[in-house]
Image (cartoon, rainbow, N blue to C red; front, side, top):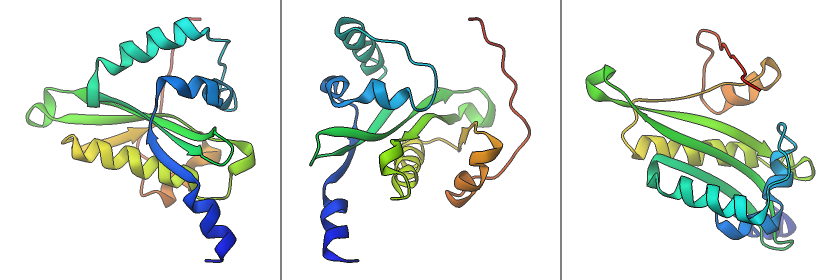
Length: 156
């Protein structure tokens, strides 16, 4: 790796979401993935505190570019407690997105690995996610395989 690539790599820190990340472009990043309306500072703090009560059962991670102070990637995993598999647990990965300006730098892979490792460390027997056919090759490179189909029913 060249020195400039090392400098970029050193400036990209993966960590759990912090309440101050709203000011670092977290909501704007989510808008690159899906519909995400404006969220007031108060609402953001309320939701952050609500999620925090789940502890390690709901983990949102981010990659911050410390040079710019911007969040450039994110994803989440929540842990489902089940009766099957001897009262096992399953991890559900959601909302993985990399800023359009930072794609091609393996940040999505870092996010997915972080989340899968978290699920594994929580004792999950599997981790699952839904994706578009277009994103299937990416997730296959991350070690996932196609299984069955997704169904959805939206209420709004």
